[in-house]
Length: 140
Image 1: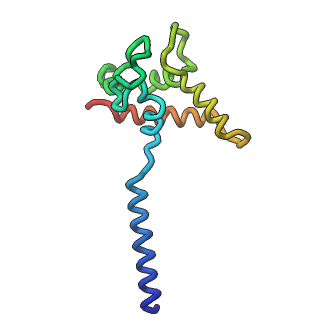
Image 2 (image 1 turned 120 degrees about the horizontal axis):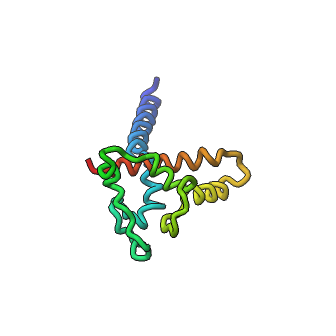
Image 3 (image 1 turned 90 degrees about the vertical axis):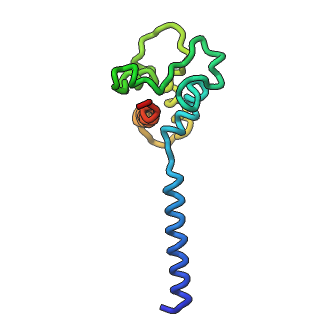
């Protein structure tokens, strides 16, 4: 191998390693992204409430950081899933929180259009990513 080829190869290897390190640092956090785009306006970026739209709500949104604490140390994933999805929540008067399962179905249908996809799996994935992020917000 010539010196020029060796230098080019080493330079390419260096760039590859650097780009891999940069990508690893910029790992996507889809649950956090989902929370920030759909929940933080009411629950605040920390999940404690006090988001910018809270003054327009009939009731203050709950503090999402103490859900486990308020449930004897167990994260209430099934109950939260049902509340977010909205499909299994009985009618209970006014509902300030959107029925995200329905919103996700509509947004996904608009996004995918004629492309074959599994709507139930897409909604389930988005909700589970969101729940995983909310679980990370719990005070220990």
